[in-house]
Amino acid sequence: MQQAIDTLIIPTQGSGLYEFTQSVAQFVHKNDVATGLLTVFVRHTSCSLLIQENADDDVKTDLDGFFARLAPEGMDWLVHTTEGPDDMPAHIKAALTQTSIGVPISNGVPVFGTWQGIYLFEHRRRSHRREVVLHMIGDR
Image (tube, rainbow, N blue to C red):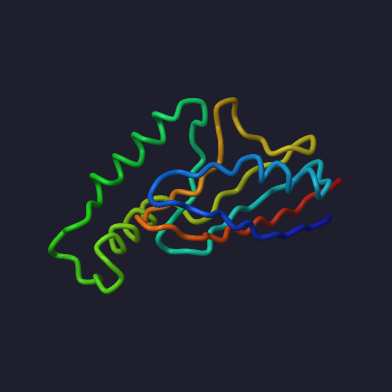
């Protein structure tokens, strides 16, 4: 059994979905694991992770729009407002999604479906440098 760990830095330019499927595949390939499990973990509370369709950009647009309507800025009942009007809605969106995803590894590659990609879902309006930790355990 072998293990590997690394941290990706994903720059964002405001809210939206940022695909990093290729970086995940490169990490798996570089560490020569044939069968195992990759855990992907984002180290922040105002963004999240998604596995989602990567064939049509309209999916990203619609998901971003849906979450913007679900937890909009300007809800006057919010208490946590010291970091700006988009911060607490970002925390709500992150609470409704996930900060960690498990991806099986088989035959040396991540087992994504035909139209699946892995995304960092940025919930804040301004640019950030998000840290995503990759941890893999498996056999050669």
